[in-house]
Structure formats: C-alpha cells, structure tokens
Image: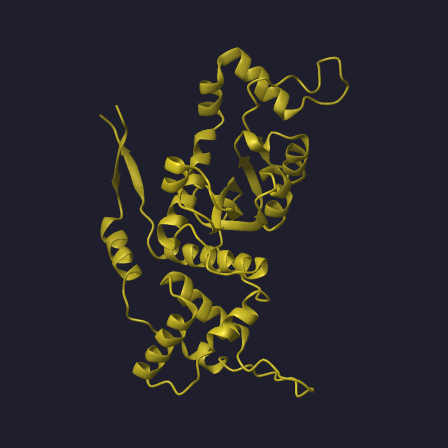
Length: 311
C-alpha cells in the first residue's frame, strides 16, 4: 500500500503557491537606484551602461516567464511604464552580450547543524528533436544537450551548488566542484551508482562526511582485511549489502532520501522547461544558474511541511 501524506502548513503553503503565480510585480527602490552602472569607466570605448543587477533582473524575468529576448524587453518596458519608472530597459542584444559574464549567487537560507547533501544530474536540451519523435522514428538530426549537476539540501530542498558541463562529462567528475561550493558542514553525501569511484569517496572524506553510494552490482572489495589501512567506507557498505541485502542497506543508510534530488530536477523542468534558449555555452550556464536561484526563491516562499498518515 502506498504511503499517504498530509500537509501541516496548508494555509501558508496555499498562499505561497498563489503568490508564485501573481503578476503583481514590485521592483525594490535599491534595485532602481543601481539600475545604471555607477562606476562607468570613462576610458576609451563603450562602458557598460546598465549594472549587473539590471542584467540579472532582466534575465530572471526572462527565465521565470519563459520569454524570448524581445518579448522580455517589451514586458519590462510595459512594467516600468505602469509603475511610472523613468528608466530605460536593456536591449535584448545587450542582455545576450553580457549574460555570459554574470556571476550568479544562488540564495540559500542559513541553517544550524550539518547538511545532508544529495547530488544528481540531468540533461537540458540545446537543440534537437523531441522525445516522442525519436522513440517513434529514430534520430534524424543532431541532438545536443548540457548537463546540470546539482547538490541539494535533503531537508530544505534548496539547491546548494550547481555545475554546468557538456554532455561528455561523467557525474563523478564534477563532485569536487559541487562540494567546494558548499561552505557549511556536511554530514552525509548521498549519490547514485554513477559516483561509485575512489576519488568521489576521497573527496567526500575530505569534508569529514559520510558517503552513501550504492556499489555496483559486480563490485569487489577494494581493501582486504589484511591491509594495514583503516576499512574503506565503500567496502563496509559492500560487506553490509552482502550480509543483509541491498534493500536493507538503502533503508538503514537513509539512501532513499537521495530521490529528493530527482524531485528537484522534476520541479526545475516543470517550471522552466527542458530546453535552453541561449546559444553560447557561457550564456547557457548562466541561464541555468539564474533558474536555480529562482527555484530556491520559490521554495523559500512556499514549501509543504508534510507528515505520513499511519494506517
């Protein structure tokens, strides 16, 4: 029988969900005050007229409302007109030209205690045919996608770290980059079998964290009992699986919480779609980081607090 859950904070969660869909926009005075770059260089050549904050704001609106460049420009111009703001909106070409140079901070709420980080990756399409077409008739055109690697807080659902690569990178290759972005103490890192590599265990051990990664089906012991080195965590997991079974190991190691990273991927693609609009790699990476930042703000506005209903 499938478990059933009820939400404790229904009124707060319901109000937050309605707020996400509101078209009532408010641009803070501090943003308007910094809309134009205050540090125009004065050197020969054109200086950046708009601040990075203005470009980030425009890129965020473009991502959240799934607008094309010119549509986003017209949307913001109409908002400024309705609000009586006498400021110019960046041209769509200015947004495209400067987007790849932006530095995006992903907002994360402070938390007491160590974090349980769940990691995974997903593919985001750049161009190519749809999934139904390829299943029915095969691939007739070149398909390209980018990989978005995420480190997610198991308890809050917030994205703590994000890395964008081309599709020829393996998941384990970027684990160290994800962990380096997380400044807080890490208690546990949960990942799927794609991270079953020595260097992944070493990188997790450097953060004094517990590695919960299922060994592969044909896995063998790395360090045998006659070795003078302390037991390797992966070997301990493998011995436990051989003795008690993989299902019990997953339950006892709290591995099933790793599925929350897949839930984050589902939320990401449901809200923003599975396709990128930018053409260059740098712009594509920034587009994904901006969407991660927006997703965190959304979950901070409305997050269900649920509990399992016991039969």
